Length: 133
Image (tube, rainbow, N blue to C red; front, top):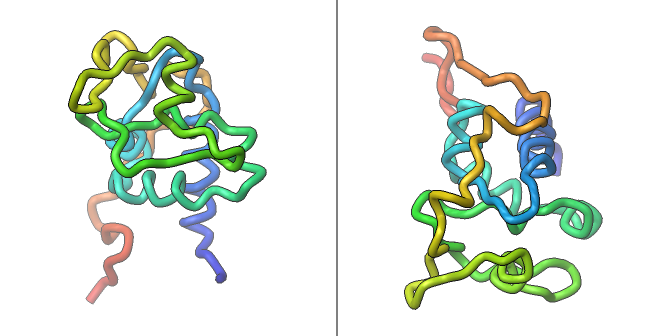
């Protein structure tokens, strides 16, 4: 399936940001989306559709929902779950599946060493997925 140049740039930037998240920390789909001026669901989609090689080499498990939960159950190409990968890094969860020390573990996307500048759509540009009339 052909992808647009816009999608390719967003994917490249999402992967660079996620790659920069240090062990023991997490970022949210919303934080990445805000940095790139895209919807959090676009970030989640990109991470849900990683190739096997991307999933094996990227710390995708460090991206979570805005409330500190994991969302839909996810596993890497080796079958290890996101929950297990985070737990191996010292992350603890409460009975509802939320990261217990979410605030302390949440990394500031702008402070990470990913080299992706903050994106801001111009006022006259349509939102992604919407056409001008």
